[in-house]
Image 1 (cartoon, rainbow, N blue to C red):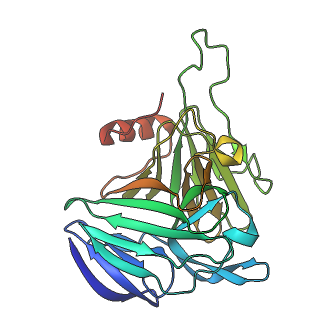
Image 2 (image 1 turned 90 degrees about the vertical axis):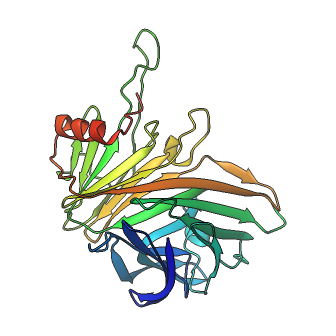
Length: 303
């Protein structure tokens, strides 16, 4: 693993790379992972420096693009707190620890530990929320990856019966109010839901419990897969969603959430994602073709 200072997408960054991939972590703002690419390939993450969300009384939160850490439930007064200050970056084994200043409004401090464990195309990202304040804080880690449009998201669905007789419901879907249920950009399958990132206007968002523990995005011949643990007995925000997908005409987001947590002062919670990039993984829309790809890559369907 190599680590070096770099300038990327207009930000002062730290670049991490190995034989298979490179990623760029912002130092002048953040914490953000602003770029991710296979060696000798283009950045998979979108750049949207012009899009901002208003935090009442605090200014604007710039989406920027790339990967970010929020915490649920979404509330403009705390979710959209600006992250325009420099972050502290410390070296750890095979990677870096990136720490944001404490949010004075909430007492929450965000940090990312980013590691390249081997020389293959895998990244481990630990998302940690610390309660540095004096009050209890109810939240859930929320890890969001913004990807370039033009591809297709793959959202695995539970298929195993919920009871021995197969009489009880075994899955549910959460839809946000701006989502058109018969959108031509959503393909509803029995084993997978597909979202085509080709909207010309509007937006959609889908959430669901995800025992399979992974989400994927196919762009060209590259497949991006992110995994996160699912705890079947835990309580999740957003009507029980541990995985979510948002899409508009500028980008697609793959999102994972940790369980609903009440943090006491001085306590922290960590949510781990493991990313994998697969080159030469041509995508064909359809459940049979995707099931073959899933089997080839050794991804579980979660039952």
